[in-house]
Image (tube, rainbow, N blue to C red; front, side):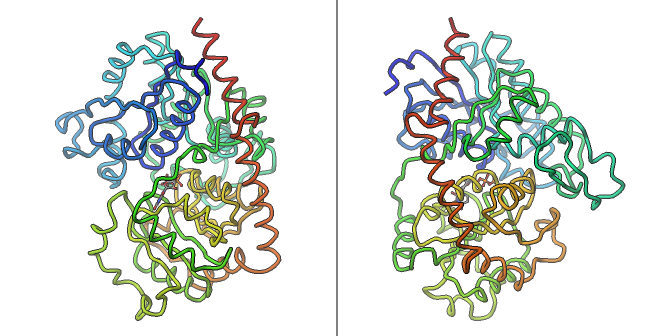
Length: 471
Ligand code: UDP
């Protein structure tokens, strides 16, 4: 398949965060599966994780050097957002990524690919690619709804016209009467100049670049896909859900989960995971534990983050768990203290609901699996995604958070609220309706990436665009 594409070479440059790397590797896999020569560029310390994520796919990995500590003010090896996830490091880290312009340009000069697909956090990559006459495509790893909301917020700045963080405003020039508050915008509370400039540059570079690849499929959000291209004037191809291109590789953790899931009835298990970066204060974790127990549904709950192996994290006792919780939940609840095989879990027929922080990858993985969701947004564009799940495609219910406080402390979401939200997606007619809609979307997602499907065809049209440019 796709032998005719072999002369095309696409270079991918993902941002250094798991939630960006995973969909970018999946995207590179989509290209490789269709015969396009695919290379991922990353830094030395990010290479092992990417290499593991690539697995057996036909993708080449090329490493460049992250600037040294004396240039960045960061400790040696601090090359991804996980290790830089502290207020004193994050800004330095974002600034350091700009210093990668020169090493990336050296690779471009040497390999001269037909196209560079670079993350939104590298707005400068458009100019770098242009120096060599190479088109640059932006990859946010997002769908059209959050892309449209972000573009309208940055263009019209409705948040500047309200007098408080809690006063609602309508997002201008966006179908669906979408109302937000300033508290739900990505840069709050890290209302920082570096970040704001970066997001402005990113928005601008979308317009200057060859186009945008969305991790979505047309049937999921036709109104917003059209709005993005026709009204907001951006060129875009939706090639997702890219996670459907991920092969299933057996691993010991997966086997354990599978064996556990096999003992459960269809749609009976609630899966709880807040992405790759979220950390909660102990008080919130305790409320989640009590809420899950009170819901009376079997659960898989991912509590520790990072790509470290489970064994390394096992040593840390979960002291905040309610008295006797693990004994009472024996056989009923599976706590994963590390990295969960999320897609495999979600796709299992025993799983009937998903408590999620609404990162776009997780959101889309929930859609593909056809499970209703409890939305618990934390940061970045997750409030937009939560709104999409609840109000646009109507396959979820909110847990009621209005702002970023979750990670920072503040009042935890109480166990009664969690219990009620879990029951709403797991039991009764409302849950059945949401599940039916979710399953329908999941089916359409799978059709979209098959031969003749919308994402498959959009891929062809992107290749034609690149080919005609290459001639
Ligand atoms: N993920 C996973 N296991 C975990 C946590 C996360 O496989 O224990 C994957 C998840 O399937 C998704 C990605 O990591 O593909 C997280 O991306 P998302 O956009 O949902 O959230 P982020 O981590 O960027 O906040």
